[in-house]
Length: 435
Image (cartoon, rainbow, N blue to C red; front, top):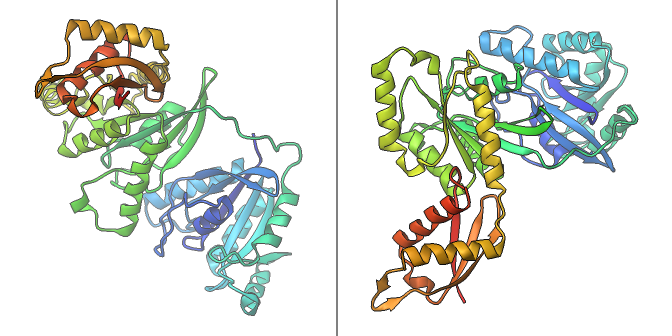
């Protein structure tokens, strides 16, 4: 493991802005309203040839006003426990407040190395604002600007000195990336918590609890996984807040970097039109897919509800009928092992590579069985084929006239390749190229 550095502080002091500054990416959502970050966000940082893991946390409210802020506070405390070094961030514009004093006492009890940084100091003329924080009993404060980069260099020099020695190893590659996507409140965070056996993500009955796309590294039976929890994807017409718009954009971007998407449904509610759209997003992306119907414990023993669900699946999800389906309960853990089995099976097919001689033999067989139809008196000629990539398996077929390939014949070839090469659970792509 790389050394872990956690950023903590009150809501809206600029933790996510600092996180983005140090990771040199825009992984964390940033907005002027407090409470945007809720889950712990992790990213690997490389600074002056040194690697470490940086953790962004939700704003620590010393007096939780509701259940959700209480859960966020628990997430912050977990981050403090696993960190090797803590960055306690203050707001230089507001000056010290009562909550800062309580946070100083909290990080001291952790007995970890702590760096105290006063944010929103945009230049030398404002450094005097940081002096007020020495009243909290701090030996050294670093005036910085997360937004503009002022003071970051000297601050990072000290951080690198405080990192534990002998832990700087590059992060392993080759993890299977699995995005869990779906409408709000279908149980995405609850499912990932169940799959990894830990309350890693904030869970609430309130729709829209998850805002960022959160990456979780996990290993099961020697196989490394990377789960991506995403915000619930609602219809555009219902999205009003700016933060939610960016959350949905990040959820859709998660489909571009995942290998497999677990599309989560609420089994007790049936299949909505928005569920169909989400399946369409994943289908167009070409990633591996698994359909998981959560809250199955609410459907069992109710034949009418179960029949209604089956009818809606057949009627609305026929275009991805090849995608494996599992009925689960994140609450009870029912069929979670089956979900892992399906994910592993889809992963194996997703990485399939078929040798060119076998591809051409299959192509000759399917064309003999069903030759391409005449189009305006001209017949399509298929010369040879080869697999050009995997993830998903993509085949190029060289022909005389790509412009006269009919969609029905293309679908026929895709279905035949899926059958011939045992790719019955994933998307297969076929490209037609002029010889």
